[in-house]
Image (cartoon, rainbow, N blue to C red; front, side, top):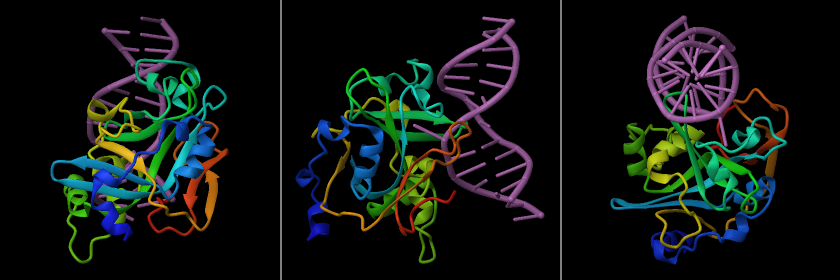
Length: 210
DNA sequence: TACATGATGCCCT
DNA sequence: GGGCATCATGTAG
């Protein structure tokens, strides 16, 4: 039943603005188990969110918003529920969603997903071969990987309203609730590296390593 | 204008 | 487990 429902994107409702108008830590916890959806010509991409990280505003040295508004990070200071996409290491796009009311900076980084539908398209976008031995984790386990699998770029998706029914990129709730959630330090940062702001679905095999 | 660096992933050992 | 590609961005000069 749940799978049949997901086959029709018109029946999937984006999470409302209120969902994101909260502290990034609360949004992070509640995003676990939700579904990221991309509508595209070749079909629907869907995947369950299994790992995210919270980035706070001024009191978080690891956050892009820590030193104030810039041409790159302005989305974090705007309305909640908008995508913040940036390019890093000369290779990768990383996908976030803005949180807190307009004027307050904060966001959540998407670190890993569990693919549900559109797997062939994801494999194609990632340029990996999915034969019988292919590991699905290569598609969406890792922030750079999931962005590539979903075709997310700054040019195409930055500042996109994820709460709009017209959006080709949004997050929906299919009723799934994680059995258990774990909170750990964030991955790949040097500043404030010890703060427990990484949220994962305990035991999920699509959670990235670190 | 220059330069140091990064919320990563991949390949090699 | 370690090295490295590769470039947009921010900050200093």
